[in-house]
Amino acid sequence: APPPPPPELAAPVAVSSGRALLSWGNAPYLAGAAFVGYRGYKTVSNIKDKQAKLIDEFGGKLKLGKKQSKAQFEATKKLYGKKLMFLPRGPALFASGLKAICTKKVSINSLNAFRDLCDVFGVTKADQVASAVESAVSQTNARGKALFYASRSGLSSPRLTNLALEGLDGKKEFLQATQDGYAQQAYIAALGKSKPYTANAQAVQALGLDAGEAQLILDDLNAEPDPDADKEEWQKELEAKVVEETGALPDADEVDMTDKFAPPSGKEDEMMLTCECEECGYTLFIAAGREGKFFGDSYKCPECGAPKSKFKIDEAPSA
Image 1 (tube, helix red, strand yellow):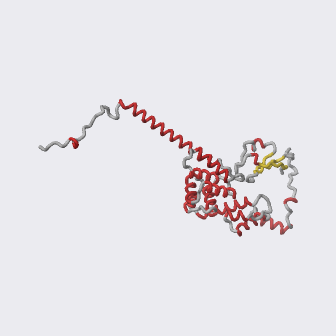
Image 2 (cartoon, rainbow, N blue to C red):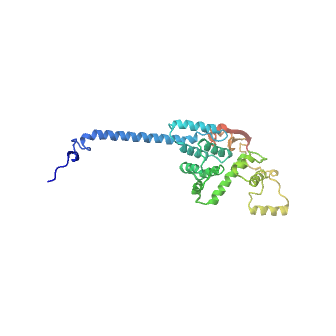
Image 3 (cartoon, one colour):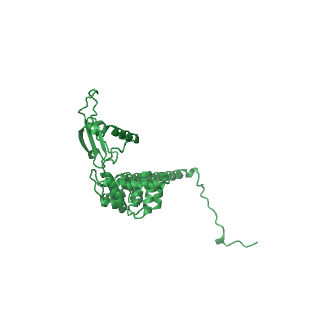
């Protein structure tokens, strides 16, 4: 028979503890470990939920419009950085701010807000903007606005264009028409609120308009309204025939349109309130005495969200 192996090469002898891991004796320890694990999971889950709410809240805390400033963006970013315990959430906060900007009307102010937000968060690459749009901006018109601001800031990309096309069935002609419309809308807003409108070279450059296109917009705004613009062809033909047979028709202000047989309404002296938003120009007409129902203290402009205090109220007799 072969000699036995030396002691150092002999197989180790298993030593039993006398208790299996999954046994009733270990049940309290296993239950305790499971409880600790569950509490840890819930704690992490709650922290993530709170962080998500703070990130979503960030965009709404940015002051947008005439009172916006890069300094306010910086201060808000710093504040929410502390609330998020300085965790690296820069891209998510940028996306939240971009979403807020894209809910506002297209304007020079909104374009400047986009550029300031990019500066504050150090966004210098087109792919960073596309990622923010993909993660936080879902509405088709808002994605179109993001593309508009990015293209005027050197941050556009095929990826961002494709995101803007998703809600337009991929039709590039629709997207181009929308982008042109945004440029015209923003330029008109930059010209002021009353005639005669004068050119704004700074707005033309910022919005990427060419001089000829800007001049056409200006000429159209300053042109006298065409009284026949809203008439059907048959109306025009009928009026031409009447003029040919009886002579020129009187102007509307020369004709007494008062119903001589109508009973008194009791509202001859009724006043109308003209309420104009000083932020965006939205105008509301309300009969005097009914403003409590339609223009209460909690009223906000449906266009820009401005409070009631931002409305200029004038009175004029109703027609």
